[in-house]
Image 1 (cartoon, rainbow, N blue to C red):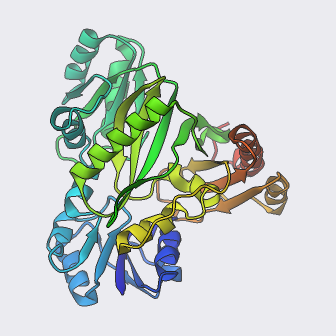
Image 2: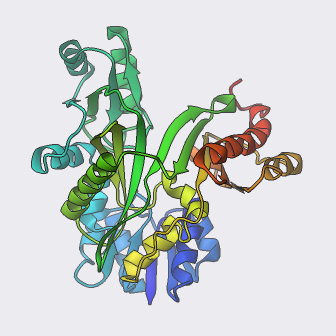
Length: 392
């Protein structure tokens, strides 16, 4: 089976390996040559993914049986043209939805009636100020088109509105008429990702993954995640119901990362992604099959196994610009932490907020695993903290 993988970023090699293990021929297609996926794929093709004409021509020439998209920077209308000829995962509609937070929120709240935090949309700083005056503070402001947490701000007072608007709009440059999402801050116990798989046998759920964003050394952002996230039986059943409704509404095969907010037994829908997300990287150690393996199986219509093998935690560090990787001393210190592992990502320095490194740890319980992964991350950060381009 020939698969065209669109997107060859830091995690592209994991996608290629997962499909190749199942006997597929994988062709890595990306706008930039020499990406991680291209180095391990059976073949590689360089084409501007956002150019519908160029992408259509490349896919016609490659004639894949399956088209798998691993990036939101792709011409969705080009994918739509192949949906009658090949298996396209995610579907063109779901790729568009990944770029349309407003459309997704209206689908969830207005059409499906899913519980969400109170929200509004604003097209100008003045409109955002009026919403804040009506709804009160604090509020969260998010761009409509971006990665999770990019361009996000918390409004505590009226003076925060203008900077929050500028920050959100500055990362939403891919839309012609910038708009932002404003949400009332809901008191919650934790945020979680519920990995939900659309397969030939129906929906399958992984154990919930808790996550939070923390500040790392030298101004870097760190995403901490852990599995399993403890929650009440009622909350877990509600989470499954919300995830099933949004994934069924989107439709299609593959892995969906459903983002939820939990407060006691109450659960609120927040977001959904139609491909493996960074919070799911903890499954590289917590489950028998990682997010990449599960995604590949679901795409190909194969049986799924979501069994956990150990409680685990992960910390993924993001940074900007050219940052050197940790040296042998830092790696040795990190790997002396019991049951730990690390990954260091290389990448072009021009990519903003790229992944720098990942620390993983397992233990008999989540609390110990989180402590171990923090120790491993601290060791990695010693080199980034002293880098002259970092913020002290």
